[in-house]
Image (cartoon, rainbow, N blue to C red; front, side, top):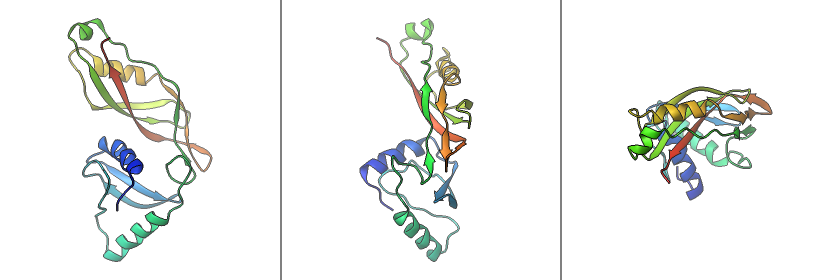
Length: 166
């Protein structure tokens, strides 16, 4: 399958932190397949697995004619959006050490809009505590929950916390 530049950029961001982990392909509320991400998806993807050639063709055909929802995502699905964003605390020792960069976090936004467990996907610093500062800040975020067909659901999200010296 090939993707336009907008879809390719979105897929690259969404899959970069999921390499080696399973994802589901959901069409019209039905799980069509569960796959393991082997690498960040760019402008094209190969879907492989325990498929017959006919099943793979059916899946590709379904993906190409699936209803395109407004604003991305799957039909009937809305993604969570931040209501309260807390910036991480940039501690003096890390500032003095000149550490700058980004911590990539993954969490699940719960059905009530709160944040579940937070995991560091890409570390910046474990010595001066910037990874932990990013986790602590993320736990304080609040979201309008994601929904599926109007009902609040848990949604996995990735968030980058950036530390920049001024």
